[in-house]
Length: 364
Image 1 (cartoon, rainbow, N blue to C red):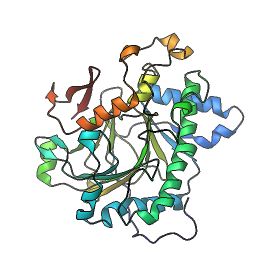
Image 2: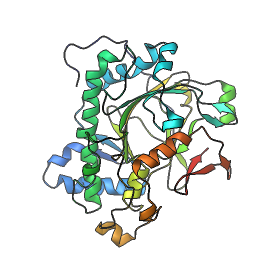
Image 3: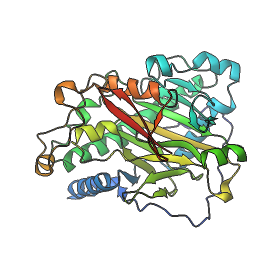
């Protein structure tokens, strides 16, 4: 993490926490430090299994990053947006449509949200191998800190969670760690993401939706909690509920790959981003994410040897022989999101086939 001498960057001043009375999702809080206590690993594995199988989201706390280190990373996260000119950003665009990769910039107004309204979100994505691509000049001095933060997320957050998910399926604890290797080719990456306020007209046209409901592509996602609300999950009862901010916590959710691996035991929960509550209108929403993907050559088939899914029954999305690799799945989903005309099947759902006959659904 940051040393005593680090490059100076502008200080990001976050918005005050919202005081609005909102309908919050009831998410489990997982204390990762308990993994080192007698019996703690088994207890955590059960807690995580219940959380991910029932809702798909939970909070992780006591992960080892201090609040000061958290704040420094948020300062760094704003650099791609406040310290890089628009002309330079064009040099570092991600090849989203043709290569199905988010590495680099995704600029505003690329995606269609609804009613011909374009998005107002910008993000900069850096592969777990920070040397894989060149970066804007303002980011280069920060790469040692970004690399250390990526490694912290991978080894101190993701690997423990992957072990807990494996134990929850009564599999050897390194089952998922084995196909999430840091040194193996894959699209695991850090994302710095900034939502900008929109016009009242656009809010009305999209019913305040900033990013339509979706599931994540990979196995596990870590969102570092920040005060500007907007994230909502589709609860099991069909209602959208807000995700509350907890200082220095990580909001963790399962993605498509983990749902495939677990034969449907672990849920890739649908979530979306909406306009923040009234007392946070006008503030940008700056976020830091770690998207953990299996190695590119991993086939997305269930671990059918799991005693847990043998008892419950395996729910396959593909026949094993026809299952895509992680590379196929993420390229198909990435290249399609927000860029293709979708077929509406109702007020809430849009869908189109993308990989091996499986439809991805987006919720308005």
